[in-house]
Length: 520
Image (cartoon, rainbow, N blue to C red; front, top):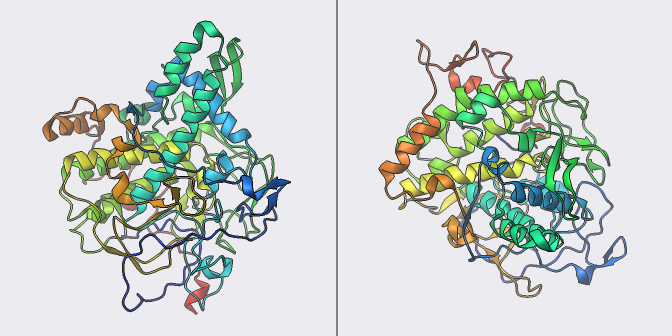
């Protein structure tokens, strides 16, 4: 079975280095002094950006620990919390309205996922060399273009840190906005702000299978019950529906549906917005009915059955559960790893096929370099974290063990042994520019230490009780006579392979991958 590799670039992989060892906290974390031209590689320069002194750019991208624990609600339930929804919409918009170079704004927090540098965090031993990691220079090791970890033992924990950083910034904005509300309702909004967490887009749920996108992420406009000025029933643009690019982002490409010319497969011009499941190469094209249909079919035919397998079958290791490219796993384990399920989520939202390159419909929610700009990205990864947390409850003794990470990241070289003490960049423990330290997987093993949990885990006192909830949430799928899943007239042959394709039908053979110029 063909595995879906969620790296949009051409990788030239070297063999493991002799004497390889676990990469741990470096002695120093030098700041990148490269100037920024407003292009795809949008780091913040040391001296100035649009007249803002570099000295003002502190390490404020800090992940904090402790504090009160509140649940991350599913998007369908979130909308019922009126005050919290009012704050969420305004806070999300406030993050989007920040200057593109602000490390605490939406643009930079999204851009760090697959494009670097962010907050000038570089590894001085590797430097800042686009040619070395964008797959362009085949005589050198190639790494993933951003800080994100994919096809790696660190995949789940890196995205846990990333989603938490965004959530904590949302919460800070919400608390500030609550203070601007009229005095007679201010305390109510203060309490809502304290509890505000990122919504969860559970794309394996019964509700998504039945209804498609929740209105919180699917509606272009939202009605606030009250805004911070005290106005009631105010209709506003929904910032959770799409992201408007503040600057042109991306590089020249050969076009959608064809192999990318570089590691950066799309260009979004300033003022353009993200879209989901377009039915043409036009980056502004969108079709909500096609996207809804795909999402509903994917939930029942792929995600629910795979989640059911994930929670009810044993895994050899934590790495086998979370990493599609883990080694030494039992038969079939990589087919229902969380990383594989994560990929189906991106495919169902982006549309089309992704096996080396796209065919048919497709957009940035499928493509690593730009997918994090769509607001739904963080809600999808909140769902991944929900499933990870559930699995951890069922398997409390399994955790990250030393393993080879062949792909590396912007900060970490390829073919390194990683473990629970490997630094997760660029997430700081404090804002000391000189001696700051990064967080590690060991620090965020327990999600509640980060101030959130999930309703499905609240009040659970045994594994049996949680498995009963798994049955209720993800056990509602049907198999046809051949043992494959069928829904809405779509019969899937070789189920998991067909999961990589759109609702228009299955293909007998996967698409040919893009040619690898490094293989010559």
